Length: 415
Image 1 (tube, rainbow, N blue to C red):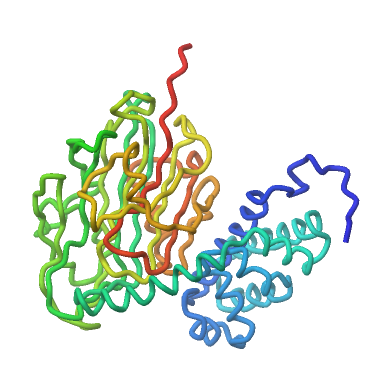
Image 2: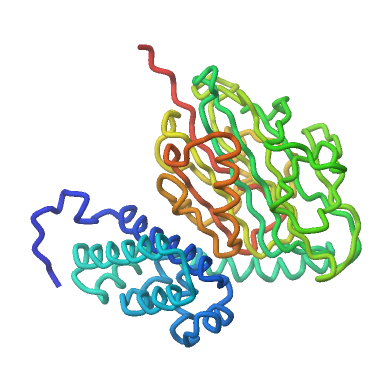
């Protein structure tokens, strides 16, 4: 169907894939937050259907839309506004937040405008989304990684349902030519299959030549009694607190989980956060600071990984970061962007834009995630609306690897 449109060059024509995907992610994020506010877990289809008194047939495609890595291929089945509205009505009846309900309905209405303006009807829009998708490659990679996850869980005696790392880049308050970095790391539903110790998290940094960048983080809240130097966020950890020990390594600090109970008896969630002050220059320094980015070490068998970066609008980085997955089996620890091309592993998952502020940061795998990020922003005195967010998520990421999100540092323009 051909639709006459006199504004094809305007933003309202939604002629770019990024503009269309942004709206889809707005709908997804608002629905996740709405379902959570209604007391349901959007990552669990049957429980959500039962809690909202809806049929599994209605909730299943919506749940797939909320949880899929490739949102384009999961969208076609749920573009019917009536399905979305039934979810909204059910959440309203369960006492969901009225503001979230309004935001969700506004996002759905915007999506319907996108469908009309960009394609004319739902069927044509679904066909257009198919062309934007990358599900075939992503699904094949995921199937292979899932087999590896099961094998690694058995071999190493540990597994984790969800792990995340979030890095917030903001100008230093005293010298805005330098960048402060806030690091947040968490494991959700980690369990041992044998009573083993495990290296949970490694804190380190590197110059562009691969040498270790010195410096340690400052906990964003007062140390927890008995936790030593480990910057736990107690309110977001399971009770009793995870038993960790800090180990000094040549690359920095490593936090090891001590031996403990196996299976669900030892199920735990652990979140830590710290701040690096004047971590590096925001601008190009040849051989030292040609890149600005973050690494997420992946050493634990995981069902799902989420890696978010938030960058302040005053920093000189434009557009989404580049993304690579680095081999950590054959390569030494470190980071050398100029020479590590041979370490790149296949990665079809794309970096997604979360937009400005924190509305788009919902996670179906960890419903407390938006509250956690809001908590950290408030704790360090930052304004969410001044930041743009980007996300990389991978199901069953291969180990040992390191996910890397980075920008190339620009030269500073002389005034």
